Image (tube, rainbow, N blue to C red; front, side, top):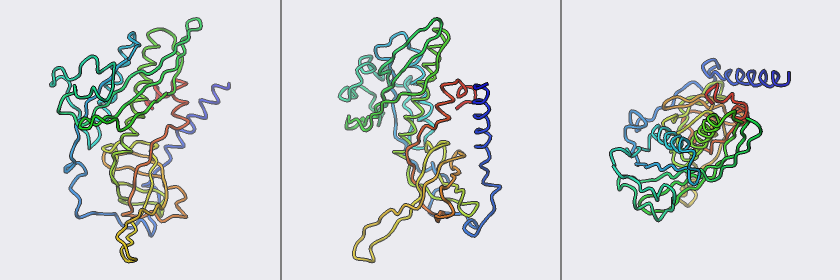
Amino acid sequence: MKKLMIIGFGVGTILAGCAFNPEAMPIGQRDSQVYVDPEAPETLTTQEKRAKVAVIASVGEYKDFEQVAEMLDSSLNSKLAEFAFFQIVDRKSQGALIQDALATGTEAENISTVSEEANFVVVARIASLSVQQTGSIYSFDVTFDFKWISKATQRVIMTESLKPPTRSANSQVDLTNALSRAAEIASRDFCAKIAAKYAPPARVLQTRGDGAAARISIGKNYGVGEGTKVCFYEIIDNSDVGGEKRDMNDIAQGVVKRVEAKSAWVAVENAEKVNVRKGVYVRVLEQERGFFSDLGESTGFGEMFGW
């Protein structure tokens, strides 16, 4: 009964989340116009300079789980390839792109062995793994380490150690699949951090419900996902008071509820007390994993619903 109650609560929450419908919101005084930038290119990606990224994935000392390294590799490649500002170096066309020692060593000073084409290198590996078996049930904890490295300077720009939610497995094969799923989640979360770092300032294109819902000018092409937190701000020019300093004046925060290819709809927090309107600037804050994402993974519902 308790399990049924949890399931019912989760489904109810999912349905409640689907209730966010900007098109059904009334058009208030602040919502009457749509922001248009005459200086902007026709699309957000036509003028974008793409940096080339090479991905290195390794199981480290856990040699029995090569499938997990393959998942790290494919997940990072596919997710980063979606971003407007990255281009993935084709490993096949590069021949011996990476020496085997680099895949296990992953030290920054060894990055010189990577193809000259790459501007950045992502190194991902299983950092720690513990597996417990009780009867036929396997439970495990796993941590993945990620490094984001500049090829030109051989400097590690970002290091992340991520421990994704996990669920028990009923067999050795199921354990490998569960580990691969954990690798996919960790890769997705790391890419969300990369997106937050590199996404450019966006604009509010339009609002509905007197600013309760705001459509912003970046979407999947800049790594924005459902649950991404954003901050709305204005640029304050202080040159008229004796200086040339331009400051960011934060107006409000919001959470992305719907993502499109090149735009996204955001639910604005405390909309009745703030002035989010067309043309306001937006910056991406770090995407955080929500309670229901963790619940979905630990119960297996995440895989069922594609979370």
